[in-house]
Amino acid sequence: MMSDPVKLAIIYYSSTGTVDAMARHAATMAEKAGAEVRLRHVEELAPDDVVATQDEWVEHRKAVADEPTAVPDDVVWADAVLFGTPTRFGNVASQLKQFIDTLGPQWGEGKLADKTYAGFTAAKTMHGGHESTLLALYNTIHHFGGIVVPPGYTDDIKFEEGNPYGVSQVDQGDSDEPLTDTASEALTHLVNRLVTITGKLNS
Ligand SMILES: Cc1cc2nc3c(=O)[nH]c(=O)nc-3n(C[C@H](O)[C@H](O)[C@H](O)COP(=O)(O)O)c2cc1C
Image (cartoon, rainbow, N blue to C red; front, side, top):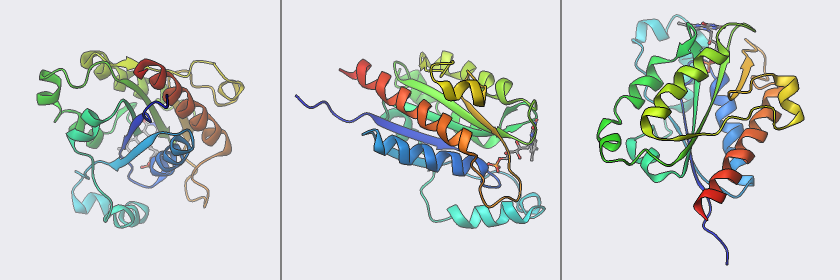
């Protein structure tokens, strides 16, 4: 008997497009892995005058303006949730955190528990807080009663990419290729792992 496809919500925040590129790649790979995917960015909260300080930020806001933003039902709907955030002073971006902090009612009804969760991030520098950001994100998953699915070193790419807590990459700045080959491969691995493990839990 064919099992239902895994429902994966990819919920992310991005100011200047790096995490957005990671999220889109993850969505493509998850669909390839047979998942039903909701790709959702969260609402911008930064004041317009702050967004205006960076052309890339302004451009990115325009680029996603017509796409749906995340709502609590996206998490409730999902069997697996993949969160993406830029590193902000070694921590989760407040825009993503704000979305997470609207989930109190769903948490109270036990609707966030027993799902699988994982995360990815980008930072400007090599040791600028990739791991602390993901670990901070995962604090919340414990409160949900969620099941964190870390990649560990379960594939050769992880020895190259180097983050056993999730997937991360150094921001490529103005490059036309915001997603590195290594991060791309590591995201593919994480998504396949998340979909496979979630499928086993569902069956
Ligand atoms: C307020 C702020 C705080 C940041 N904090 C860090 C940091 O702690 N470590 C780091 O390496 N990069 C930091 N960065 C850089 C971003 O994490 C990095 O450029 C990221 O790739 C941006 O992702 P995006 O293009 O998806 O917005 C910070 C950027 C901003 C605006």
